[in-house]
Length: 329
Image (tube, rainbow, N blue to C red; front, top):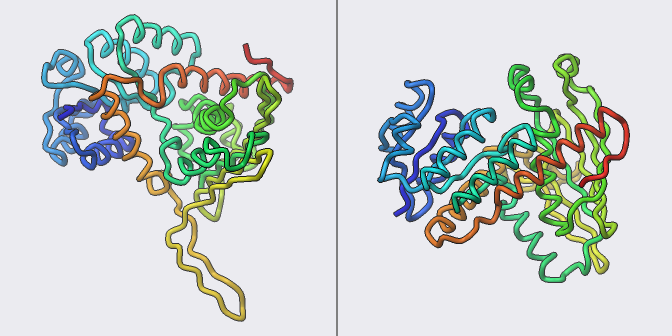
């Protein structure tokens, strides 16, 4: 049984706690949060104890931790728990600074630690099936990838101010998926950003709408469109064109029922929240983490993946602000 402590009892901590409870062979033993009432509430829900972060690091009954705290705490906590010989799952990003993130991963390597990054889209059942079709040669050699990523509505302005921006906060997921599907490192990045949803987002120094163009060293291309607004629901689609065909993954709807009549066809609306869209992916992600802890093997999304995606997000940010092509080193 893998004994897990959750650091951070906010929204994403609650999501991961529910996922742990659905994974055979895993249990929650401790919760830490800066807000005592939040920690106690989550601990009561899952039959765990409230402990401080330092107590958890020193607890012999804790095998692994899930880092669900604000981003500015991630790197320090990863290093602390790597040195404490605990397996670590951390929500993206490791840090908003590439150099700090890379240095953190170096510490994990020096400690011979296990670090998995929270890129849950790689674990979505439809996206996994799409990747399997590619790996199975069903569409030949991949040539272009198109990713659509649109939130139903923007997050609160106070979140945007500390998020690191659209590229580091939102598009980083798509950049990771792009690397996963292309299986070739990115050579050049182009990006344009606009403020079309809410002027206050621009006043906070961010974009709410963006288009990204990536090209790999072998010439493969990927386009990514991101928006903080989609009035029709949570829009998450993938299209991959290969030399012998195409594979797509479409949106998830509240129901697969479709009503047709002389007046046309009516489908159920899209799910409108990321926790609903990726509920199964979160469970599969934690299962993969527990499997890696139990087997002592490398997790499917590593610290190096986190650094690579952050580097691309930084390149997108630079390309959009400087209005030029960025060559990725």
